[in-house]
Length: 160
Image (cartoon, rainbow, N blue to C red; front, side, top):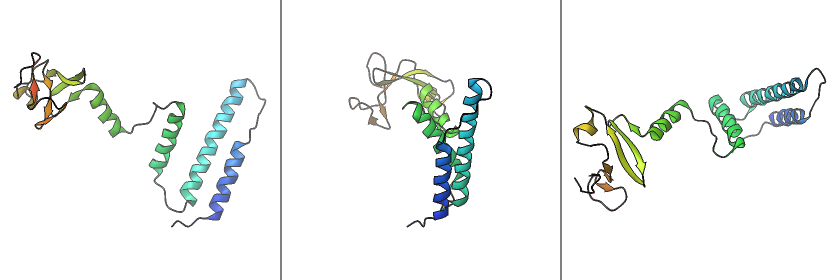
């Protein structure tokens, strides 16, 4: 069970209340007031972050705190926006492009089937005899769609 530090929560509540008050300063054009408010809120975020880092019951992971804040900000825009770290972004790019470097194969999805766009010369896919237009129907002898029992089907539907 966590122990709560009352001083931390009091400071956090005061910081949040102070941050929710709106202060308008009439100095110049409207965008200057908007910028002032933006930077005031950004400063508030920094203050709350620092309080969490220094006074929270357990030492938080700074990068996880920042990543969670970024994700919450992006999700608030729409349900399809989110932040990916470098590793996740690289994995998404591989999935989206359909390129699998380890096999030497570029694929696409067509009518629910995995179709070979092109094997790359000198790679395992080329050595295995895969050709453009082949449809991959199983992986490691496990059917992908449950209808075939071997690995590749040519465009004319003969099994190999």
